[in-house]
Image (cartoon, rainbow, N blue to C red; front, side):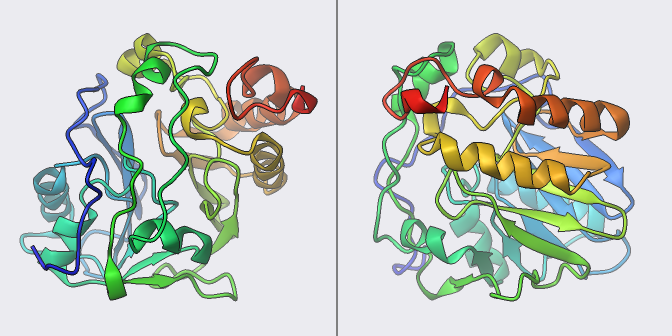
Amino acid sequence: MDKNLSYGDDYKFIPATSIGSGIGVEVLPDLYCHTIQIVNIIMVGKPGNNEFVLVDTGMPFSADEIISVVNNRFGENSQPKAIILTHGHFDHVGAIIDLVERWKVPVYAHELELPFLTGKKSYPEPDPTVEGGMVAKMSPMFPNEPINLGTHVEKLPSDGSVPHMPDFRWIHTPGHAPGHVSFFREVDRALIAGDAFITVKQDALYKVITQDQEINGPPRYLTTDWHAAWESVRRLEELKPTVAITGHGVPMSDELLTTSLERLVREFDQIAIPDYGKYVDKRTH
């Protein structure tokens, strides 16, 4: 490993897996979603050419699986033009250093995420006391120390464009993480939402394992600003997306997505915001 690149000292395999693990879904001809244990990676670009990017990099120790998925979709020894991050939590950057060392491609993230990606700052610790199920209780074992990508990570362009993702723009959707971003394409209203909202109740182990589809706010145990999280969901609902790929859960589309998002915005305080937890501000209820 390049001595300038490192995972945090608390980097480790997390023993949590859903029935969707290892399954890929072609959501649109140029949007492919693949589940690694309990989190999704997304490939943006059509098979048959090498003009594609990887959005997020899964769980710790998942590099071999990601490389295999990329090769299966785009051909042996394919590599993306770039890796784009929705944010830097452990389950979205789990394989990133292995992939950067192999592919030598740039990484892009919102500038507010850069301290967590360059070894400067740890995320707040996950909250095991938050209202929720078994995954929330497990959350103290989740890595929160910063990884260090050194000079391999750059901030997303300030004009809202996304490198190597033509027609998409990035939207700042904080709450779950300070520099969390989502990606939206106006022409077909496709949305890559990251963890701004998700389609599974991520704090409940049974729901995570079975991947029961239900729209929800961001994972509770790592969300520190619920005011911002609500506002971010409101911004995304106003875009009227026709299809959404989220960081956790299966993709959602059409009327189910529309009505679910409307309900989430309307009832965010009941559906998403926990009744208690160290990051919960009572005024949000």
